[in-house]
Length: 494
Image (cartoon, rainbow, N blue to C red):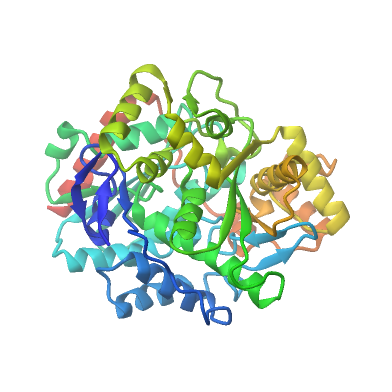
């Protein structure tokens, strides 16, 4: 299976090479070409998550041996996860909830980022690389800590994370500021996530920056790196097989997934699952008040001319959804078309896809958005009526499914993806339950008292960890900051 740049299909490389590069030199995203191949689901309903991960990931990573993939999986999905199922499926009555946050940082990003360092190590060996891998990462809250935890003190790597100074939860910020490891750096940016992401993407393709470093290869741990994307396909298959095993669906029966969506990576993994053989009817794209994706899917128009809103689901507070570019390439198979769209977005802040592309999108996707009040109602309803505790991002997805079902009357079995522990947003969750507690640590304790749900160990110990990183920069300082950081890494490598 080859991976091509979404902006130049002549750039055609293996998956291990795509992982190392992160972003194509032309700014495009490396995208797998499936060529109508399918994963055979027969006889898989009783296998474990790790066994399923080996099957699914092997389908996409053709230049890795089975032994290499199994080795990476065994190192990733171990005691770091506090549930033996890795991603348990919860019955919520009208739908199921797939909990993706039982990893070491209590967010769904762990499912890919605990694996990525091991994959990159194998990829480096496979391609004869000797240089230090410098990883630049932008985060809207969860990716940063998951990447920092996974790459801490990994040999021949150095990771730098940029996050918006305002717009992440207190717990998310403390998680990043207390990160361990001699090879990590965390920097706040006085802007939003889009500013952080723009900075990282431009730096990884900027000739001045690339020419100024020696013995260093630049990459990313964001979902622009295909190594982040592939492991996320696994849990879509796992949810389906779990429903099949429980007798809630029949073999071959289609199901829906409702996905809290910001950078479009999580839901794109669902699209890859569908295209590789999983019977999915609709992928419901769930947005918060930053509803640019809902508008796009419903109208075909992507318009950045709108306010950026800070919400209680900060990991979705995004206006430039990078992975959407991959979807548009897969639908159009036309790199010139993608270059034109991305150029128009950069210059005009707007583009509109043609009728054929819009029809293709609407055949696979539905889209809805939720206000803060909608989220409050969903968190309150699930806790008071079902005694299920969810975080605000999950609430957006659950509410989107409610709206989808009310509008379409579709009775198809649906799985809502739960992407973060409610304890990461304890204050906001309590507020939705009409309890006021501003202190984030007291809020976690209070939430534990009323729910009986155990606080994840990594969050329970956070209060007493020393803060290591407090630096904050202006947006315009970003490039110089990256240049200095890379020089530091380059000098150390030399």
